[in-house]
Length: 201
Image (cartoon, rainbow, N blue to C red; front, side):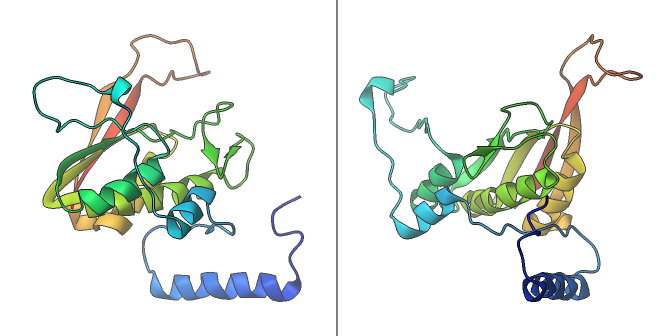
């Protein structure tokens, strides 16, 4: 059973028509199945003013300044809050999103764990990432940089998605990082590295 089974012929034709229009506009890049149901956290941020609550017991003091902020919460909510206070002020953003490896309980989309057998796991990941990258881009200074850790499962998709959000000309580099030196995973090759993708605003 797929998520299209319950749709009428007219609804299916509308989806096809929408995708055909996107294909006419887009000659190169990333096209994926867009979400049918908006993430609840996105709706919450659209319908309510997002706020951050200061918890003094969790305060991190490294010097006499109050410049350091640790935000605990959903990343979309946090990024939305920061866009009210820090828009265009950030030099560097580092994010470590889910690698979408298919491991059980690795990450949730709309409060549901994404199963390794989910036919739309890559589309869900792209939908989740696109919104957060757009919010991150708004936070960066004009010469700001974003550094994203990622595994091989979504590296290609992330590269194309960053091209869409930041512009392909803003791509800086992809770096490989050795994540383990020995492993017996894999029948022929053992994965031993993950990647860092860098883009400029």
